[in-house]
Length: 573
Image (cartoon, rainbow, N blue to C red; front, top):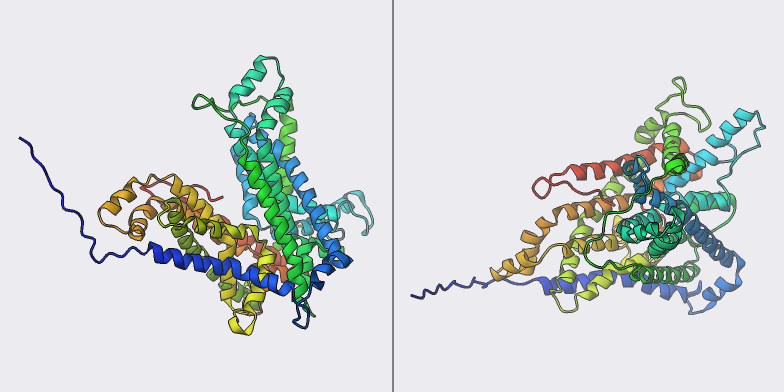
């Protein structure tokens, strides 16, 4: 006896699939965010002071030494930062990933803390430590040896000091890539080298390093890119030393009398170099250093340091002292004493700077409100947009959805200072006047943070099998309903992590912000920069510590949120 059961098809009447209209809206919105600033940048670069078309701005980049020199200085600085970051990060990564060094988990956590530290705040910390006259290191040096007040041990206001200060906060990029690469290297190859009589140094030179060389090169290129496009640290350390890099020179072209055409022309080569570096980094990472055959490889081979252990510990402690511990201690000490050079004792302890920042300084309240309002709005709107884009692209639910992926990733190639110039030129004209409002800052932050948010959520979508989504579609759910009720809850931890990542990135942004704020739209990062120009390092330290505490608190709270049935959120990177 055959029994057939007929299941009624779900009703679809009245259900409208909004994925196509949303796709069109997102393409237009991202096009506006990315293309419009670049269009006005190119347009203004071809105008002279009278509004006439000219190529004189580009000619000046080659003939004018005051414009040519900052480009060359910036390139030299970026290359120096890349090399120094590689020299610091590569051995440190090997010690953490492939040796029996004690405390490797804590070391990794302290290194990744550098991601949370704004580079401009790190530069100010080293200003406190190594200024030739008042720097804590030089004060201690003179006191210890009984030297004259004009003698010093280190001077951070030099080209070499600038390279060092930036490398302290770019080497984690190299470290992260190399650690990940080392953890994926099959230990079978190293074991084979050892069985054939190869010593540890030989295995490192002939097997391990060649396998992770693509990661080393890619990380070095990221460090070079970060240094080349950075504004805060050069503005704090290079300008007092009497020289410009290209980002500070572009900023100076907006000071009175402003030269927007020349600034736009100077920004375009920086944009081109950035695109070339990103292309090179993608090509390097696209190459496979090795291929694992036969299934899962064995666990990483852990080398015993033996008599080299104490030298390795000394190296790691030195790196952590210079990049994390000393800068943080300098900020804390300066916040709690009246002067930089004054030692921290019970008699010198004071809350004067805390009281000044939070109760006397009129700009603090407005800056805090603007900063956290923009941080919340950028993180919320940016994460929501990135979630929809990642869904449409990874599931290929709309023809041409890959275009959204390209548009969402494109801003990564636009340096912050270049985006700031483009947005200023776009939204300071009478037809679309947003300059002087928080809207222009929100647009800037959404543009800057979109690539990171999209990449994180795109990776998360690829780890979720689409079967549940297909079941929802069979039962009559639209794509947007499926995303809201099925997929997004499954990716709750990734969504929260992305929100935290975007929030932290927003409150520490300075490169684009410095060109877009006015007296009524100041942010904490800009207030810190302004206070540095007036030399109020105590107030800067209070604000800087507040930013750090809030950033770490966001990560810790997010990690304690119960998501996905009690699982914890992985640390935001």
